[in-house]
Amino acid sequence: MLDLTKEIKLDEKNSRRYRRLQAFFYAFCFVAATYVAYFIFFPTQEFNFSFLMLTSNKGNALNPRDVKGTLITDGKFPTGQHAYFDASLVGSFSKIKLSFTPNRQSLSPENSHIDLRKSYRAFLYPEGQPIGFKDGTLIKNQNGSYLVSDGKLRKFASSTIADALGFPKEAFLAIDSDADLKYNPSGDDITDTKNYPADSIFKINENYYLLATDGALEKFISAGAFHSQYDESLVISKTADFLNSYPVAKDPLGFADGSLVSYGSSAYIVSKNKIYPIGDPDIFVNQGYSWDDIITISGDEFSLYAKEKLFTLTSIHPDGTIFLTSDSHRWYQIENGQKHELPSQAIAQSWLKKNPISVSAKSLEILGSCDLKKEFFGNYFCLIPLDDTKDSAGKYYEFTLAPKDNLKIDNLNLLYEKNMTMQNLKLAVRSMILKIKAHYGIQSAPQQ
Image (cartoon, rainbow, N blue to C red; front, top):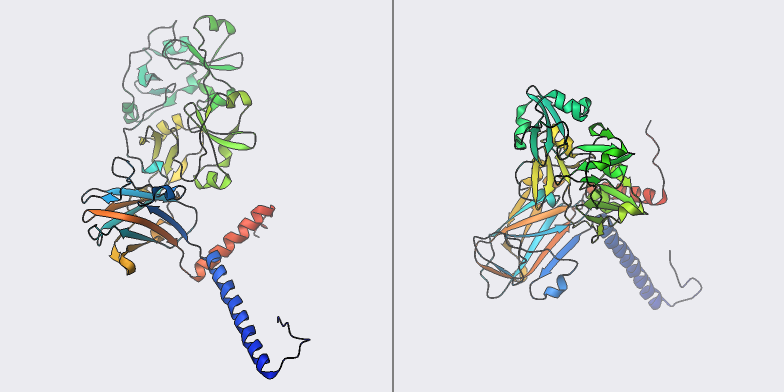
């Protein structure tokens, strides 16, 4: 024990005083250690939004917005109109406490209803029209053979025409159900054996080309870029003389939208003509990506793209991202602020050249809800348990507020809490041990 008076003789009065102070010091240290341990093993996470001081919300904003997505800055929430706010965070929590501080001139928010959904932000996009087969896909069924060209399903007038043009027989995907074909509108039959239809694919001197709708050959910047979009089986091999048959486009083709690439020590997401640097490995994993899908690229390939802002935990998955629901086994592709179903595995495989991001269809449903009640100091609050969200992939929490009356709110607060249970303690200790092992490169011993 700590004793500063071993060599100092105190009289009885001062000795008693010293022992009391010593006991107080020990008690204080114990309480302080317990307090710190509590927040280590049972952490909380808080988010705030102030409508009175908008400049204070940077970095901790909850993004309150109306149904059109317009940011609410005046704190007004009209009755009958849903409002939304959100938060993204990593960690396992037991419940969320939502607190509202109404303006003095506001009606009471009591009994106003709040719903919660938890998923990836892009997966909560509204659902658009289904998408059919990707351009360049070769298909066959009992009625004949087809090429998907400029979004349309173009039938070869006869099998001899496909053979004469050199389309590989093994590349035609056999379709049992005609239902898969209805998502691509019908185009003109292919009857010409001298001119190729758009979206034919060629390989010339180890370089890959795509015939564009304007009649120009678009060269892929690399073999890696080609294989991120198409299978080798689709290729028609040609000699260098073939380049005299069509003009060659100036701009090269890059990687498939949604591709994961690495350049130097950083990882990126490719979408359209842009490239998004990923903040850190934890973000990469928590956004659902797989390390197996990363393609190493060169400086020439990297320079093809305009570098965008950092991709973080709050970022939305860009166009080209494909989700697969683990519970209903349905594919969705993100395009232009909507998620579009890829209606069958055959259609999905024409687009997918990497692992899809796994998500739960249940996350589209309401996973929790509560009604606001009055608490001390004029605030209103409610609690949403998170037990039903544990198996839902994604770290994005979206809240929908349905005001009972016209409201004017000064402050909005979210507090994520973890219950003090033995199970949560064990999980926290295990997580801490795994992080320490990962930091120092310690591998766990294999189980016998």
